[in-house]
Image (cartoon, rainbow over all chains, first blue to last red; front, top):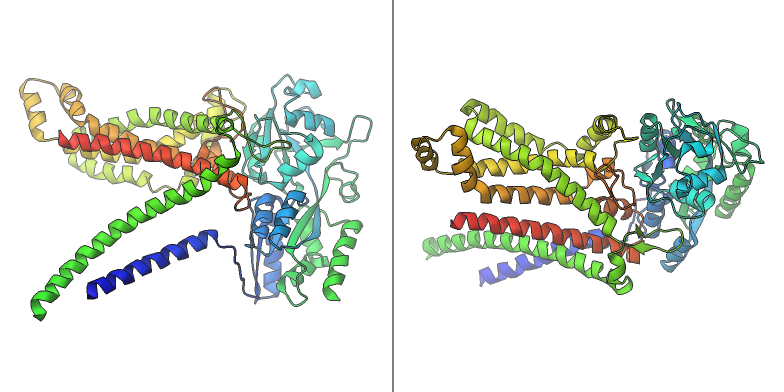
Length: 305
Length: 294
């Protein structure tokens, strides 16, 4: 009898363990304690937002903010799956994602926390100094495959790009390629991996957020087409005013508007404060422009009322 | 009453403990399999099988998603075959050296040293590959960059070495000394003994060791993710970038929403990979069992 009883108990125990393990894998519930904030998403933003979180946590010792990367698509998927409080994204959320979110009862809200001058980079030995967006698109679509077609040496072009989880990958595809990437493109893990690749590859071309620009790679001046003016991503006013053709907003998405007394609200406010703007500049990015700010302020007003 | 029955219950509890653990292992394996199959098979309700064997994998395409797994399968096979081509000769030769030729002291140093390779985190090997090996391969073969199947295979081969060496060495070491003595008594040299007596006797175990190494190689993810280049094009040379099944899953699982078609398709990929490694492990078990019967 005792043995049978024990057997039942063990089986019940095993069943419980399996249920716990599988619910851990599938479960969507995320009830974070009030003093924690979980942020996930864009690799372009991960360093900047981590810097922000560090300063914020120094000033608010009770707060516990975790920031991870993985790509904008990852962050938005995690927000829809209810795993995070804020999704970082270097691209605007897609309609298909909004549909999935509303199907799950998640109301997506958008904040613009910074601006990026997305850089097209090449090896410093490459004589090419400037490209039009049309040329960049043709190169990444695989239509232009040799540098001599855009005024460079007679060398095959090696394409460095990101993985499909990346918001930058999507941004380029949406606005510049307007078609699929060449299947020959190398899919790199992050901005840093592209920089490392271009540093050693004389034939390479890559795209990175301006915060990742370092010595050893050369950013190209860009123009919309050959009748417009070529602009460098290093000209701050050009990026802020959107004259630089790859100036793009960097987003944070939340599930509904955060409450006034929540850490999410307080952190968003901090990011857009003067202190936050200084961190943005130090990280190599640019502050949100007046139009972005109006959008944010409108949401803050809704929260505060 | 107490004395004898307590001992009996204790024995039975111990037996039960081991049985329960054995059953739990099987339950976990079956659970993983059914979980994979349950979700993976749903992908086939929406994707025709013929499309699955197409030449283009692009679930997040700009216009129409496509689900052809052949480039991914090719990537997996390229890396597997190439890395085994590197690891088997190196591994078997090392095993012969450790088992037959090395002095006892050297053997005591070499065995744990080989097993230490297994404890190097794959991400560290990947970093070494990215920073040292890839530029070296690019220089050596005059390529614009070294992120390709060849570079990945070298690193994955290093990861398969401990399995191959360790098991081959055990098998060679377990061959009775009478084989060696008989061969040497017939006037054979050391090399002839190894070649004609020991290697044939150990062949089943060496094949099994290589198969287990293959299982390791097929499932490797981190290194290929970091250094194989991950392009979607079908690889035509070993110096082309490849995207094995493992890295495809690792990259794309992060962006999918649970339950959608892409999610199911990745589970289908996982199922294929699981079946591949299962078949490989089964084959190596059969080889090992056969060897023991002989």
